[in-house]
Amino acid sequence: MPILLAFSGGLDTSFCIPFLRDTYDEPVHAVTVDTGGVDDADALAERADALGAEAHHLIDAREALFEEHLQYLIAGNVLRGQVYPLCVGAERVVQARKVARLADRIGATTVAHGSTGAGNDQVRFDVALRALGGGEDGSEDGSAFEVIAPVREHEVAREDSAAYLQERGFDVPSEGPSKGTAYSVNRGLWGTTVGGTETHTSRQPLPDVAYPDTVAPADAPDEAQTLTLAFEEGRPAALDGDALDPVPLIGTLADLGAAHG
Amino acid sequence: MHEGQHFDPVMRDIEAFLESSQEVVTGEVDAELFKGNARVLGCDSPFSMMDAGSAEYGETHHAWDSRDAEGFTKIAGMQSVLAGKARGMERDS
Image 1: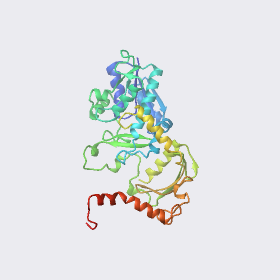
Image 2 (image 1 turned 90 degrees about the vertical axis):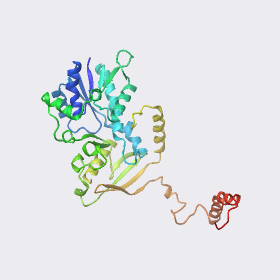
Image 3 (image 1 turned 30 degrees about the horizontal axis):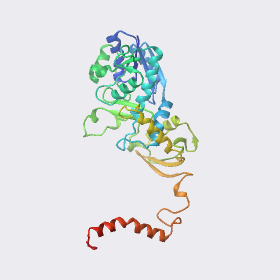
Image 4 (image 1 turned 45 degrees about the vertical axis):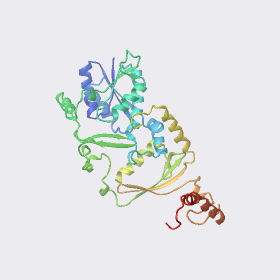
């Protein structure tokens, strides 16, 4: 019976594909739910294939992310601690929903995610997947599928998962947003989070290189960018007079913002 | 949602509240992006209460007159005055 893995292409979920195959000897389907962080879908599919996935599924969930979550975050001006826009929590709910639906469709009895034991994502995925029909044991308690988190369960550190991949002849990303294994980066439509190295203590800021898409403020244009945003009943509707659907509008704003630090 | 509780029924109530709150959130916002800072320059809406025609913020007023205002300040201070008298406070302490 297939295992369905929520796959981002990062270090942890890359580790999971060969690890799950080795450990369970079952076909592993990889699913990437695009919540704004997917630049090269073909590369992701190739990567999943190369790592040994039975199949790679890509689901564009950006509109669902807006309709089911972002519209409320915008309406409420929601910022945790007055700084953090809850971007990752929102992505995880949408991803869990799409993953659960796909699990039913392909008859997967196990859903796996790459969360570690350290943070909030493990709670988000476990709780959401169980609320959507997952359980401790797919067969015994009548749940549709079992939920597992191999990186957490086996307490795999980033150096170890990198070594595991290298031993089997797989590349470990040395460029791109993660800068190798130094940073864990989650890019999405509503924001990007970065963790690692400097974030382990309170003493230092993140260096400019750790920001994946943003021009450093000092290097940003000397001329300010002004813009006009139109809202209709709380929904972003137009940018500088051009009507735009929320997803492309937010994407355009993100690009503008990134160019200006 | 941050802590994985999106499926708690109270979230549906919160979403209903937020949706309801957006009924008159229609208009335009002018913003400026500059070297890592974003700021609002100004905004306008057909539903603006600042355009409701009865006053200019902090300046002249048309919806109430000076007698209304004096009556208001008298009543607004009543609680403090009565508390002072009840405690036998000196007027200039």
